[in-house]
Amino acid sequence: MKQFQTILSFELKNFFKNKIFVGTTLFIVAVLAVVMFLPNLLDFFGSLGGDDGDSTEQSILLVSAPSQELSQTIVQAFSAAFPDYDVTLTQDTTDEIKQQVSSEEAECAFVFDSLTSYTYYVMNRSLYDQTTQIANQVLVGLAQVEAMTQQGLTPQQAGDILSLQIDGKEELLGVDQAQNYWYTYIMILALYMVIMLYGQMVASHVATEKSSRAMELLITSASPVNMMFGKVLASCIAGFVQLTVIFGSALLFYQLNQGSWGGNSMMTSLFDMPPSLLVFMLVFFVLGFLLYAFLYGAIGSTATKLEDINTSVMPLTMLFVIAFCVVMFGLASGSVDNIVMLVCSFIPFTSPIAMFTRIAMSTVPPYQIALSIGLLAVSVVGVGVLSAKIYRVGVLLYGTPPKLSAILHAVWHA
Image 1 (cartoon, rainbow, N blue to C red):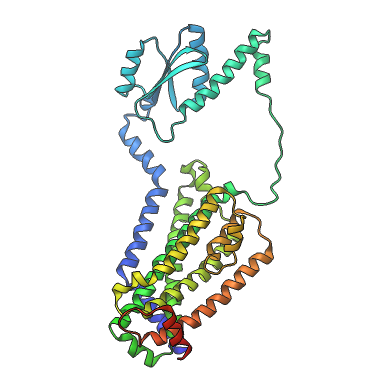
Image 2: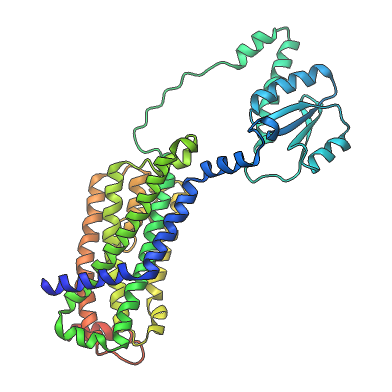
């Protein structure tokens, strides 16, 4: 036990003294701070750019219609539908309107031929520009009111008909996928990145020790099990600390700026994870990380040179990439309970992200969750012991990276 504690403490110190590790963590925290404070920063610099903070900087939306009656109707409706715009009625020609939009005197313009026919002018169309969609909805309502009044109804009666409200009640018996989507996506991506990054790091550390012959000295003073478990658990703790700092900072920055985000649905869903789901995320993170870290460490012990690592770990990396892609396709399609996801939920190499996704985005029977976690936990112990044996025989494997059959033969006869 003392050997294990010594190795664990030594490896943890190496992580926390690593300038790249600390620098990367601080950089990500700084980026998150900028993102979370972005609304306040934009307001601050926007106030510096204005004279008195009045409405002179408000975007202008021009409206040109063939008749005065139609113009007033559209302007009133557009003023209510576009509160961020200064809706202005104009009698300018089409060429003059184009010139105002091109010179950015106006943000955009609508030139109407009739209530149901217009041309929309804009200089640069934003990726999130929904101006025409909103305008279409407004105009459909106006056209319906006009059609009803022509049939003998008063505008008040037509408005009452169109403003009928449906009293629909919703009772959610399962999971709201729309609400859970963003934090599920972020957590899966974080798990993927951590396993890939720290797995490669474990393999590189072991290969470095072997190439420098340090492994031969270490193996004589500590058991392979203590060596392997100490290294892997140290990397797991370091990864967990890093994620805690990053997500904890993001939560803190969001709480400080929650009012500035104005109830943004994506931000709200990101930081509204149920505690039960957080527990499952931690369980699958730890078990999944340990499983792959043990395998990466075992592969690293069979490599003679550091340059051989990328080639040696390629099959394992591709296995996890395939699992990640399967889960992402299922998440994007909304069908997380298909047969492929169901099978992947019980395969230890894919269950950390597949089962977590199903728990977050669907209703999974408790026995399936227990079975998945049980299989994964048993696999972690088995792979850990096997990796320790490979680590022990890997000390003697030099030259060309051995085949899997040769490694298993050496382990069997060790």
